[in-house]
Image (tube, rainbow, N blue to C red; front, side, top):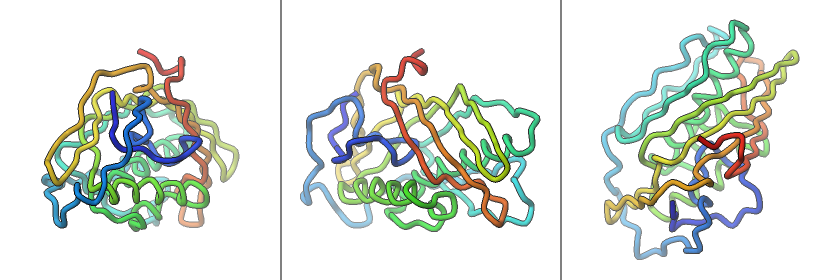
Length: 217
């Protein structure tokens, strides 16, 4: 699929989406003429918190998303408390990025709750690109094939993301940029997480391999 927006990044390390760099589009970001203030972003919907939070004491932010953006996580519970907590917090971290994009808040508190270090800095730059282009994401994400390992307060997680039904929506023109799915619509992610003092598994590093053979349908 083609994406008119592009980020000038050498590696895909920002978030679960990274649509702005996908599918080899040669087009540049839209200019200021494509922007308007207060553009319609769709009816917000609330995302349920993880079914089993890592720590009851941690007050996780409520995630609210546009009604035209959905997620399907095809990763079953492992039966291991820490591993299931890693998966649950990573789900919310993924959604927090699209919430920040929809609300045009690059330093959104929900994003900062789930991201630290390099991952937070990259996520903020990624969100800013959408804000500059007056755009957001729309469609249906699918996540699958997770592998998680834990070692005390650290964890490593790999998983696949299906972007074949996710698109960039330009708010001024209320235009959705759609195109056919390609090999690059499927992305392999590798995340490093740490458990903070509140018991939340925060993402500190996130790397992506677009078009990975491991994620192809």
